[in-house]
Image 1 (cartoon, rainbow, N blue to C red):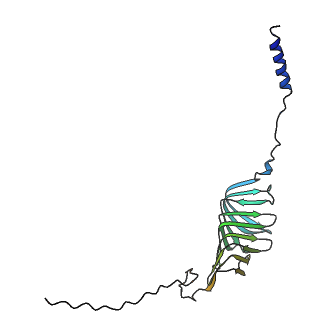
Image 2: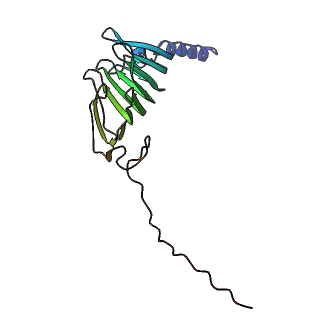
Image 3: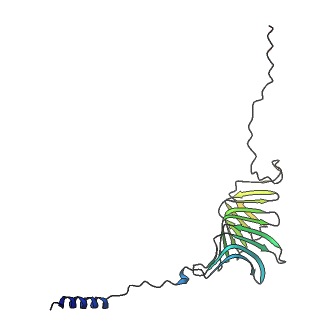
Length: 211
């Protein structure tokens, strides 16, 4: 009888082990968060309607179809060249971060966004949308546009895809270079403030005293 407590304890332990339930969490589908493709050191050509239209250069390129909407992600910056029908470079685009929503054919460029065309046009902003379906560019933040004969800046910008026809509203200033006398290449948007100083009259030295 002295072993009875031990026997009862062992029976209770075995019964407890048999009644344990495994606690598990629902499986995480890799497509819920993981990009289907991640490429590093990218330098590739991209076609549109069967024609080579762009060159993409990026440190990291992610393609994520799990997000809604699906998108390409360039978190570490993007450099893009745009070509014409004869494969001549038409424009350069550079930014700190870029997202391309492939279903909508919409680019969202953020950070230090710079666009430059072969015609000498330069555009800079902190955000720019490029709608390839509608063939237009637009921005709702401060933007600055410089052409060979004009400089404009404002908080709303819209243009065609080739930046041949553009509009900037809520502008701070706009003028043709040379109207204010600045030299070519200056980016002054307003005449510099002038400070008027009183003209000093010449003074006559005091006569020397005779000893």
